[in-house]
Length: 220
Image (tube, rainbow, N blue to C red):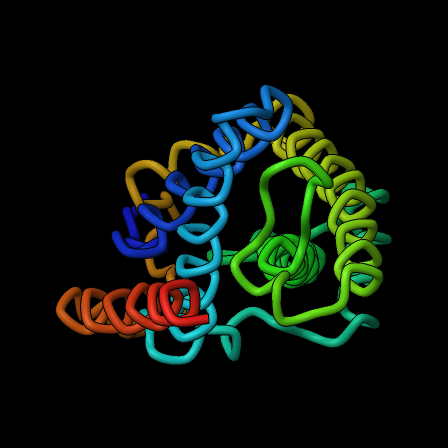
């Protein structure tokens, strides 16, 4: 067996930081009061991370790039049918169905973070861009923000269920590679040369995204 570096360091840090920040956002929103300031800061950070992930989908290592794993919906459904029959082939990166779950998750998270910029809680907290809108429009966007979180909960539950299925049903641990970055493949596997991650570029892109969100919030 060969060990292949599949998930680069910037992608792994993005993943686990995002997990932690989603937890912080949910807890702080449920506490309310002064904790809403933490909720806002967490939301800004999530938005910066999501912008970074989009850029990293074009400039990252091989399996971080959207071009390497995004396939047609037909391919995703074909993979799910083969999975049900027990005939699904292994993929070094995301499988076709998993790829679409990534796209949907990123989209829903982006909607959540973006609507939060315009939302209000009718008490003392509002997003930094809420004052640019009428109260009625801000309330409508707040409604989307509250509805979208339910969709996010459903996606997280689906994601955790899929991870559990692969561990228990297919004896394939999806968590460990997202920690170490490596997957074991048969000798000669790996699909050829892998495009390495450029850590300096990841740092520059993240700084640009963080700076853009900071300017948006600071000078709105």
